Image: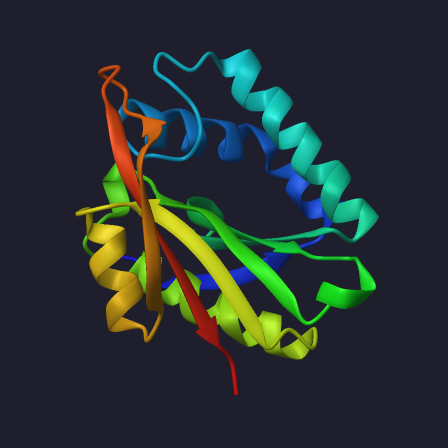
Length: 174
């Protein structure tokens, strides 16, 4: 098994890896991840999504981190940077997912830890995020020190069409 590294991608690097990122997103949605898309997710729709993320990275409103085994993208997480003056101390951690072939190796946790480090480097002292209530991501958030501050019933639709509750978290960074 290769050791994974977590790296922050520039827009140019993300564009070079866009096919792998597209496949990663399709895999996440097919495996039931609650990341804003409904199955079946077409390659074209996933590609269009990543093209938008590359634009956001170029504009400086998004940071993209990936977990790599050699040159294979195994997971990703994003930091959405608040750009308004009254909120430029905060960011949202979002779209955390790991490919099925690489799960249960601590990659999601490694992505989150590096995401927090980058957020601190960027002067962000508050992170917010949301996830499906009762899922593995909720337990991981709590284990990383995120504070649950609420939930909204029927917030998001699962791949099977049912509505589920979303839990919201924040974390103050040192």
